[in-house]
Image (cartoon, rainbow, N blue to C red):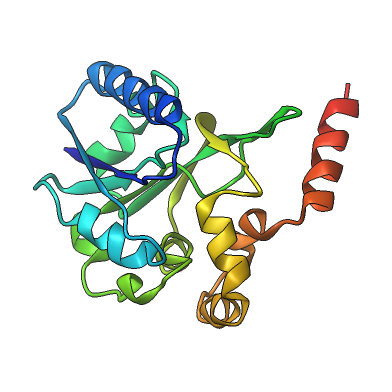
Length: 206
């Protein structure tokens, strides 16, 4: 039913990758339907090519990914079951934004998990996007959204992907212009001050 891939980068701490793998294995065991998990090397500087390599693996009708420094809840795949059985084109879930200072629930975020029918992603050209292939794919459809935070997304201002976008700001902006919903990339481009303000609002809320 679902093929899950993880792009393992050389610069990701080993303990983060171990946590990621353990969480996926637990979620796959609880899913209630077949889940195949694939680990492969990333492509430094070109997420689109790497994502295409990942989506090419396996043969199940649905595909998704988990970043190697993130982790999922044990019911992350289980909550998808009804929508997968219904044959929808795409699904998104809520996520937790994990900062050093706090974990901020974001049930309305439409970033992770992002699940697509395998046939949908073919021929869309997302593999030409160095920085925003995931946002581009999401902007090309209307996913069924499940506002449950089953994905933990680490927000690290010095992650490899953020450093690459900063070093190639002009190209990153051109990619954003091709995305129908640039708001999908707002979190990924937030400044440290914007992230701090968001955390502060969350901590202060009763």
